[in-house]
Length: 455
Image (cartoon, rainbow, N blue to C red; front, side, top):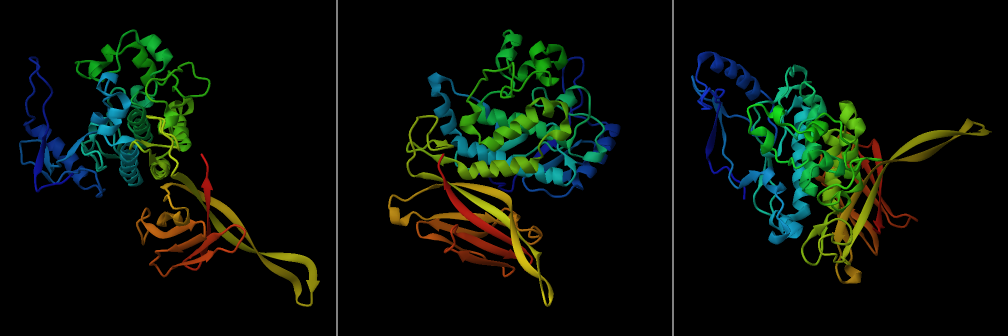
């Protein structure tokens, strides 16, 4: 399990390699003065959970800083290693790393960190699997972003930090880093975490590759990485090669696990919007990290396990083909109820007759996957409703904390668990469509209905 254990770590800046390819610590006064200015700027940034910011600067002439030392974590890159069929293939690879559930939860956590960074107007710059650390235990999902030296406010970015295979097309073309470039890098990483393959590794890429591999080390361990780029890599990084699941793509037959087996429809849509033709050419059209967080949160609530312990989406395991008869999917529809006065044509002695009418506007749909009890009379599912659904509640509550619980079963629908007097709840079990009505702060009214959905 992850812990600090009161240990500290040092990060030191090295000078560029000399003619003998030897690296030495940067200890000259000019470098220290320049590094000190950037580090003071970095340490003044707002605190963000799970972002490993510096604690203290080293004394002159050493360029570097002190940070917390975290044990029990490993680079996300370790989760990208695929075991060959002789080693157990996909089932063994997923089992050793916590399965699909851990991968979705880690991506959700990473999206949460990045959306906090972006919501503070900060660009992470140079997001790669080596800069993301996750718990090494299969059943733990602790997630951290490290290597924060390049953090920059979005209106102050003047240069570009990038790593081959994980950079947006505009960075390859010489443009500076941006929040949108971070989102593109996230999509590249997320696709690889879920499928064990790159999102442009299709037939067209393999035809161009001609025995040049996807190994990042092929281009990162040279003095001039761009001189080692194959035509296939140039096509990918410049945005000239189709995303493998793009409509009418010429780069079909993707490698790795089929995306439909490990990603919900909503996740697949965000991949297309980010990595498709429009997303590659127009950074502003890419989905934000807030959108990524929401769809990953939804996917995490839908993942379930088969009798063999494999995590999967849907009612059939893609690893062992086992059916899951006790798993069910539930959709909670959240509508905001608006009231307005409607004047009738008929006049009364007091003037026009006004009737108060209501109109429901669908605000969001939340999906859940639940295992049911084998006893039919005890098949009640508990569905937590988050605070973020209620307008104006973010300042008082954690948006992702549970506001109240809905209990849904053969006998109808009930609710409990609300401890805020500003949120009033009432069950309406006798209606044609049983629901929960919630009134927040005496102003905003919502209606929650539950539906069991067959796959």
